[in-house]
Length: 222
Image (tube, rainbow, N blue to C red; front, side, top):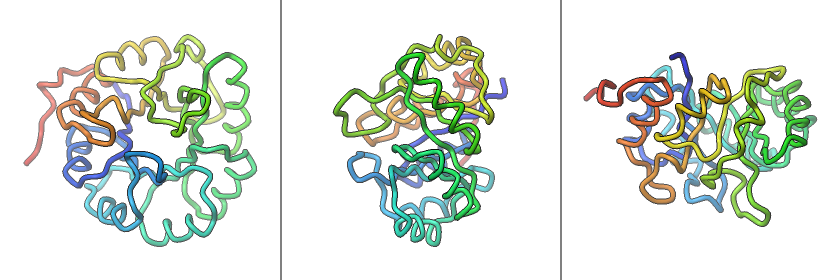
């Protein structure tokens, strides 16, 4: 099945390689100091330069200021910005124009009323990340391992492509794809052995399950 997979929160070169070998389309790098997946701009540069050709490098930022984004874009070879904070539609459009990179906007979902924002952001973003809304008072805007009611987005369409996130694992991603009709999925904590520590076997299993494959049939190149 032609499902595009994003593995977010990478911190080790071998995990970037494993993501590409497993068949994922996107590698996510997190720039948010409260997150156990946070990377420095310098480490991100090394990871991005080590990424195989064809693997899209995505920078996740949270309400980042222009000064930081200027440094980030100047230092790290990126393919996409992911805005995971409270950035307004106007801010999304501003950053898209400023940097000339595709922009993905994350929108937290907990109930049907939350879907309204997806249309507004879909008019200005290149992609939407439909994620579970974090619990009240949570330190992290995403990567909490929480799912939302997938029926809320079942066969829904917005002005731009969208990606499903929130509580996905190798065990439930196939069902999530079936229930929502999502053509893209994102995972972070669901392929970890501990917070911020990616597990290569879980990465392989997740990508295979998302694509409807047997994980044992996914080649690992050396």
